[in-house]
Length: 117
Image (cartoon, rainbow, N blue to C red; front, side, top):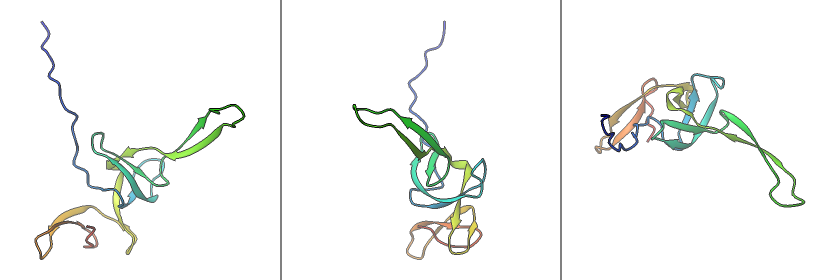
């Protein structure tokens, strides 16, 4: 007799990047490109970065007399392929978490000491 599988909720991964962060791609065909994070998907651990992993989509005309279109848009990439980027010093770095004087937890770049949040 087969064991009954429990209904599991999807795993939400803890992401090191947030929407609006500037990141650099460190692996893949778009390596060394720098862009802004447009969307974050914690369930699949993926991010959409502006100008990275561009895909073309061909759209059929919907109405009579309308012409078709070719749309270029960004596709998601895995979050392990991006690293936070310092625009002040033009360097990519890992992050660490630290506390400010007022007790607030913030993200900090390890190489530069720059506070992100």
